[in-house]
Every structure is written in C-alpha cells, then in structure tokens.
Image (cartoon, rainbow, N blue to C red):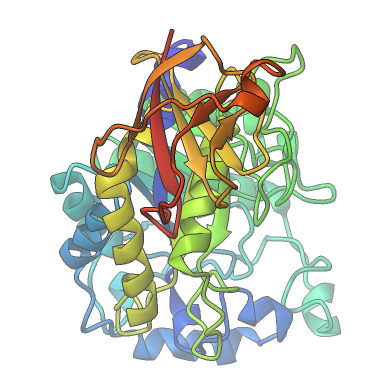
Length: 422
C-alpha cells in the first residue's frame, strides 16, 4: 500500500518548479525528439547516430547548478525516449549510451549530480519503443510505411516483459528515485496494455515513496486524475483553466510540462524562446491554480544546455530569489482571480500574495478584501504599502485600496504584494 496522497506528494506541492531534460540521440540530427518518427527514419540510418554519440561537454554538475540557480527544486530526465535509446546501462538492450563513444552510464552521473545538489531526482521513461522488434508498427512508428517490416511477426508480450524489466532496472540501480514520469498512452496502448496494475505494484514495492504521473492511462493533453495508477496529472503545453480536480471535486496533484522554446529535444533551428517574463507568469499561474511548472531544456549532442536557455533561467532565478515566498509552498488563494493579475496563498503562513501583472489607476484595488488582510508589503524588499480608502470607494464597496500612486511597478516581470490573512 502506498502512503496517503498528501504525505506522498508533500515535497512536490512545496517545490512547484522543476526542470525537464530531453536528451538523447535525437540531439545529433537536432530536429527535435520526434525526428525519427515524423521523418520515418529507418533503423539502420538512425542507429548510425549511436556511433557518433560522444557528449564531450556533458557535465551534470553544471546542469544541476543551472537548475539550482534558476530556483528549480526537482528534475526529470529522459532515461529512454520513444526511439528506444537508453542513457542508462541496461542489461536488456545494446542500444544504449555505454555502447557509444560516450562509454558511460549517463543516468548514473545525472542522478548523483542532482542528488548532491539537493534537488529531487526524477526519470522519464517512454512506454513507446521504436527500436524494440516486438513493439507494434502503428500510426506513430517510423516504419509505418515499410511493408516488409510490417510483415514481420511481433509478439507484444515480449515487449511488455522488456518494459517491466527496464523499469525494474532504473528503480533498482540508482538509489532513491523521487519521481517516475511515463510517456504516454494512446489508441489501444493504454492501461492494462502495459500490464499497468502489475507494473505499479512492482514500482511501489521497489520505491514505496516514489511519485508516478498519470500517463500509464493518459495521453499528452489528458487532464483527468489517474487514481491508483498515478499520483500526478501532467497536462502538456497547456495550463488548465481551473487547475485539475478529482472526481469528488478536490484538487488533484498536477504539473504543466512546458517547453522553453517550441521543442523538447534539441532543435538548432528553433529560436522561439519564451521570455523570462512569460516563464515567471506561467509559474505564478500554475501555482495560483494549485499546480507545478515543469520547464524543459534540450541539451545539445555535445551535452550542453543552450546559452539562450541558461540566460532565461538565470533571470527567472533572480526573480525567485526575492519573490520565491509567493511560489514555494503556495497554492490556490481563498479569493477569486483579480483582473490585474493572480493570487497565491501560503496556508501554513496565512499569507496571501498578490501578483500584480498590470498597473492599475491609483489606488491599487483588492476587491472584497477589506477587513480580511493586513500589513501589505512589497515582497521584493519588505517595504510598507499604506492602506488608502478614497472617498469614492470607501462607502460603496468592501474593497481594500493600497496607496501606490505615482509608483512604477518594482518588477516588470511580476510585482508581488504580501498580505497577512486575518
């Protein structure tokens, strides 16, 4: 039996901000992690990339330092993506990093470096595997147009065994793993097609405190709670309008996984990066709806996180250094969303945080908060904000008005006001 949902996920709902890392052979063609599938690259052609996979600039300690400086509290890296290439030293395949010029178990080095930095460690494992001879050639498979390949007999039960064996490996050989992130179910390949109940029982026996996402039963954009087969709902490239709820209406544990540009795996042509302002506001939005943000980086074939990613993450980290109290350990506030921004709420500290995204006409108006909060302060520096109830509002509405007339917003990304809940 697993611990209660609240006990299991306490660290996760406090963390609120994590790093996703998509890295593998697809960094060599540098057209994103789906290149093999979308371009229908044959086995022989794709396997040539393994012969040149030599990430001479891979430094997981440096990666961990980047994540820590950005204010990220947990990380998830691709142990195996859809192409079937393993960054870990699996006994069940030769298609792995230790058989490339890298000659290293890259998952081991990653886990050790992030764990040493005090960052919770997660592993991504794709339920798809385009390299395995028994994985079905379906509408997503790179060989979907290869009639000779489709004529070859395939026994899916052998692939199920392979999947279970590899999951056992990654949960046995690397110490405590805090989060296991499966990707993804679709069409008939869902739930018990993966022997999911058996798989989850094995996972819980090996790592009783591990968190699982919901993709043993869900696809990319599915926002339904997974129940016993998953702890975390993982909407992709979207933030649900009302967060994610369980069938009984209570808040589910969830995270939005988002790219920093438009690609998960390294894509040298994709320079459409989100600004630090966009990232900070996405993070505040997720937390205001009771969720996390898992933000992706795609390292190069040589093992470096791109400079543009680092620059943006550094700026986000600087904002969090002064405003992190409004993110970490926070959730939905007991007030409706205001027109000018968002609220987050630290239940234990009884603090409401007003994320001011748009400059209002003075005075700054907090609807229906009169008598409910005290001691307004700029979170950046702790300085006082005076309460000023003007004549035209004081008698007509139960609003709290703050004297910010003539002031510029202290932070153009997201200016945060701290208030004590009465």
